[in-house]
Length: 230
Image (cartoon, rainbow, N blue to C red):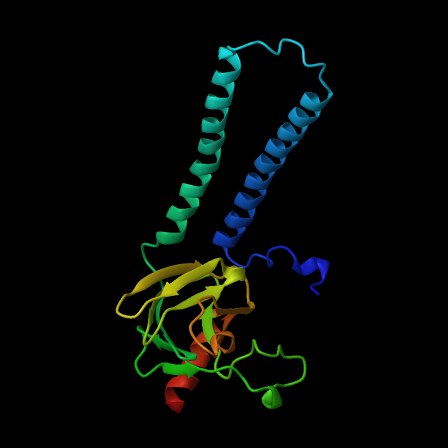
């Protein structure tokens, strides 16, 4: 059973995820107000003495229940469209990574570096260091620089996959023969976990994603070591 602290969103680690948190709170408040109004109406109807039951016309009420939902939809749609635009728009990314989904692991290719390509498999339970997360840790983490715009080009080699990291506000389908794009900025150093969110076969739940955000000097050191070992 999940702990109560795990029932909500993960802590936001990117500006986009912070916007999604605000939009969630905004929408849930509207839903709460609607539910309160409906409950109040039900209570009033159940407790009324049923006077004026022969009324056949109520233009004012019909105008209210036509115009009010339209206003509510606009109040929800405008911030939603703004977030969709922010999620898709990035003019000058500092780093581009091509992510390819396989059955059942991920491959990463850094387009701005030569020979910086590696596969990421789920770490076996017997190889996990103390304190690591079982079924979520990988042998090669995807390392990115903190506070730098990163563009991820996502595709698949065999079947449908989905590259999802909740803390960064990312969830993009990996489709064979098609290149999808996701963008993010990691707001602080840390390790962020995700999983394939598409049912892609027998080992669907065994292809986790681990994104490690580090300061730029540490990222440059890591990339140099990876290219030397390639």
